View (cartoon, rainbow, N blue to C red):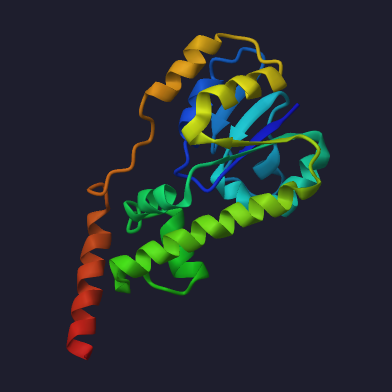
Length: 205
């Protein structure tokens, strides 16, 4: 059986997969095929757990390949905390929130105020969660897991998939920090681009 962890990102998916790596009868990976296209994008091995927030943009293809045969996990945390975490990544190259603002919302990130950035982050979180909820409407095997109540829900997940391995070590992963987002970790060329665009706006006005 294949298991897909669908989420907005910034909701504990990296930690979830680290916990799943203590399961011996399933393989587990995080965004392992995110750079693939066509059939290769969905060529996951059998008995595999995959977490990839970018699958929320390709749910139609995911449905064609796996449909009602897979187990789907909707992993989430409160939208405000998720949005604030994405604020720290707004100007990172290859950031999904940068791509969402610039490409989907047609709002160049370098021109936005902090308030506007936060509103786009909230909009992104709502959009992704709505996509996932709609996708799951007809799926017989699904679980919703709030990362803020993760340990009892992960135990239920473990039981649901009849996992084998070391549950205690798996649960201990949730006491560690994985993939922490820091505001200072931005690309300097993006910061410089931001500065130039701001300067241009000042002189234009």
